[in-house]
Image 1 (cartoon, each protein chain N blue to C red):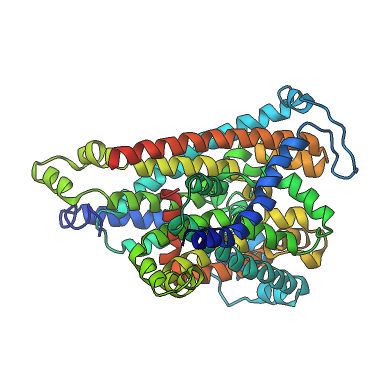
Image 2: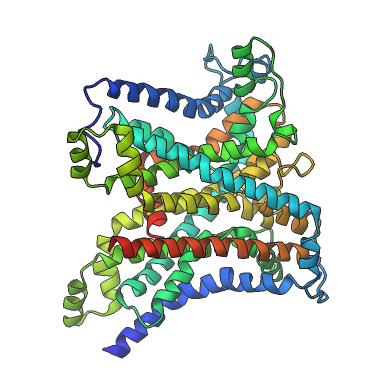
Length: 283
Length: 293
């Protein structure tokens, strides 16, 4: 545990004060989320009458029924999966390859290249928007899922390279040298020695990348036009017009759209937090 | 042996560098090229206009407006998520019961999509039944119906609050990691010497949290420049451009007005600003490495 734990406050009344403080803050912090949850189980009429912030009297599921009857929502979800899964896998694979070289096969100037790649994660995407639009236009890929798959694979390289390099650096060089002496080649060392022990790092990256790509909004906004190419977050916004005052339906939509990432967060929170801190601190 | 290593270097490094180069580096360079043209997004050719776009930028009232708003957002980023994250981290680190649950609650918003966060906060600020007006009405006894997101005076700040709600958890986690690095004996010695807790914070904890603070501040500032989705959802830069930021201004000029040359010039400015921040950040990190090694 951390430095200040155990020895402070406990038993002198401050512990209780801290606990109450945190409880109040946590409730304030949760209020927005609770509002959405409540709205999803209420009719538009109840919400408009100012009855949002109370517990529902009965289990009202019409909002969810409305969503699942809407064929667009299904298409959005499938599209999002079709983008998220391959792009997550590709960015991690590329990051593993680059990270391995930077950690285990460094060369003169490799640190500089590493720094250049990693700093890519800090720039706002706006600075490459126009050329990418032109590129995908020339390739005839506008209004397909390809721009999102390709861009997310590329934009994920900085964080994946950073985490994998840091992880591979902790793998003892002796392990690699012993394997080399036995006549094993570099590829086999990577896939049979380094990768099996880096499962925690891979889990961190899988959680981070899946969440970020799933949640993305800007790229589909730029690169898709027709309804059947939209991903869920863009779909959420475009359905706002259709359900402009149907607040409950919008709430239910937000919940359904967030469900996959929330489930991942619940189960892999450890990995997620570790990834965020490592990415931030070691940057 | 050496040729073996060289072979694998190339084989392993070529694919990631190729993909990164094609979809990130080359477009970046291309942005510079378009920034000196008047390309409209459709026509095959674009005329070279020299530094005309940049001259226009610095006389464009909308750009000045956007840069002021970005600066306000950045200043808020220095204070809001950083301060709240630090406070939460200190509270959580006191060995309080249920710290794990609290941590999850404060961290949850970070894995929500900005689209969903924006949506949630539209409802908080909703004039008729939103949480904020409901609470204000209940507290004052009068009926509040203020349209926070539709008024030029409050729209930007409302978005910044929503954004900070999402960012606080990240700051908290980094501060918590920083607190772990403080040697326990130091605080115990202070305790034994009867140093008050507030004094421990200002004399021991805060100075030792400097590395974490640098990271949090840099991330917040950079993320404030990246803040686009949430703004797009909540106000779209309106009303009357009152909440426009650089990122939003760039999007509007390029993809709504189809002034792609001009838009590219804005991206170049955005690039230079970000680069400056990253440069300062890396330098600060390096300085710290030297101190701590």
